[in-house]
Amino acid sequence: MVNRSIFGMVLALILLTSCSLEQEAMLAPRSLEFPDLQMGNATYVLGRSGETPLSVHAESIAIYQKTNQAELEHLVFEQRDKEGNSLLSGSADQARVNTTTYDAELFGNIVVHKTDENFTIEAENLTWNHDKQILKSDGDALVKVMFDESNTIEGMGFFGDLQNGTYEFSLLLQGVIRQ
Image 1 (tube, rainbow, N blue to C red):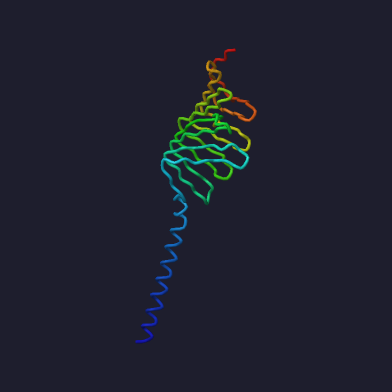
Image 2 (cartoon, helix red, strand yellow):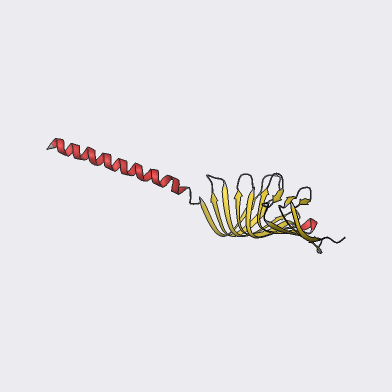
């Protein structure tokens, strides 16, 4: 009788241990899907020491620390110089930002305005490389560029070097440039 009780307790202990280990194994991958921090109607400031910060306001910001990613919904952004003058501004429906490199992917109804060059870009998807200051689109994505209030160019395969002020298309569809 005592052997049966000990056997029953050992068997119960093994079953309980195996169930709890199995449950932990199943929960671990799923926990990566949930953000470490979720904010609504929030402002997020991106900037490194010595750089002019970029202020981003979004309806929703989800930060995933394990992957160094932030996902933003319905965002408006602006970068100002030390005197408070706008350098860069814009908006997008969605963005995915690497919180370490500040590289980003923008999606949906994108508008980017570079104030000092009176330059505006409109697109549905763009990729930003922060270190190189390069903004580009997919090869088949339509991008519209407006500058100097009367010049407009539309094309595909946009590549913009914001640091040097060089902008290119792999395929120019239409445009008007007045001098």
